[in-house]
Length: 147
Image (cartoon, rainbow, N blue to C red; front, side):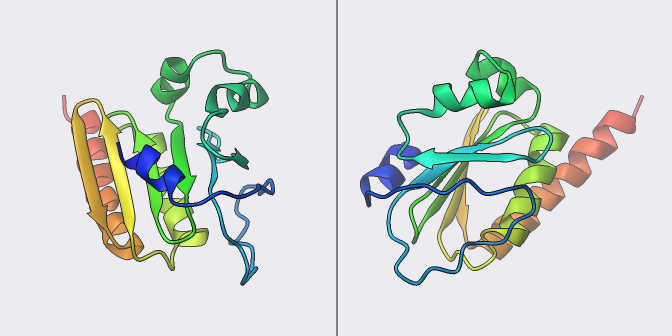
């Protein structure tokens, strides 16, 4: 699992980041920052990866499955590697992932996106992943308009 691998790379603390914020400029920033990008684009972040379910309450959600169904994106940022986790090709999730890769993680050279249903992993730079997700979003939007 890519998320577990990213989490094991480092230890660290977390600082909440508001929607649309840029990456914290901190040269000594080490560790794992993880959390959720909600369907509304809001980011909730915490140290490590074990408390993702507890973060759901901050969004008013009770289950990961229900949150993913609304277009949430789970992430693990291990300073030198980023993992995003989404379910299917939900347009909201794809748009929020693209926006986050553009604003927060544009500099990342090692990004993977794990699609949980159907299972698939994309691994590339932030720019390449943004392009792949944009193509998926275009196809998803086209298919939703086709009768």
